[in-house]
Image (tube, rainbow, N blue to C red; front, side, top):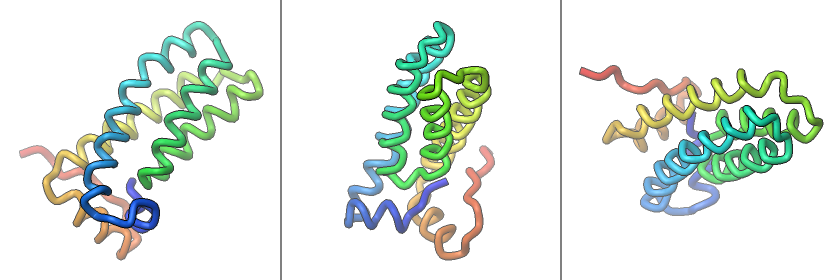
Length: 128
């Protein structure tokens, strides 16, 4: 979910990393309504623009899965191919939901670092 090494390589400070990831997740979640509306209107240019913004923000925050999903949507929209856009929107939404659950855990930075070291995917903790 979070490429900790990539994130720290960009921001060089763990405290900044702790602040950037939640901001990116929230910013991307706010863009979902705009993205959904653009998909509904079949406005390929607006879809491309919104997907590009999500991709860039996610890449800068080390959210590689989200960045890849947004990139797929951006590329499809650039070609005017929006038939898979609703499915990609669902995937982006699910990824953001998972990220939000993950970063709500107080130890998420440690878990992200440990995942990076082990190569195992991160999972949000189950709610008690």
